[in-house]
Amino acid sequence: MATITLTLELPEEILINFNGINEIRHALYENFIIAQRQQGNISLGKAAELLGISYSDFFNLLGQKGLSFINANPEELNKSYQHFEKMMAQAKQ
Image 1: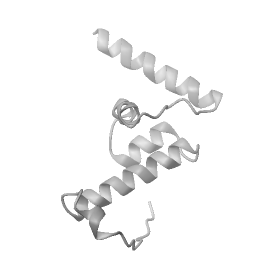
Image 2 (image 1 turned 90 degrees about the vertical axis):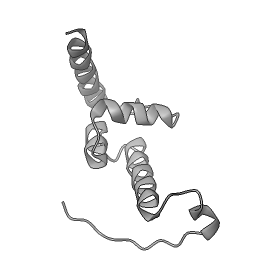
Image 3 (image 1 turned 135 degrees about the vertical axis):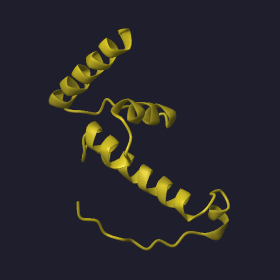
Image 4 (image 1 turned 30 degrees about the vertical axis):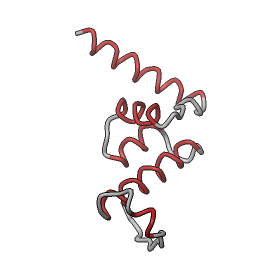
């Protein structure tokens, strides 16, 4: 996948809330990916993939941030439901 590098200026007083530049990068990237998902630009699965986490971990992340994963088209809702059923079946084993 092709990538680009951005330069961003942040106020110093915000930086004290983070433990280094990598934590800032992660927070910005995570929030950007979530915003893209919430706007319907990428799927739930793609968002999880880009963040390097599982599908269920992405659901949990959205919940931790007070966001809903249900802003999808019917096809994506069907895929999500199928994935959910698969996870539930595995949990019963």
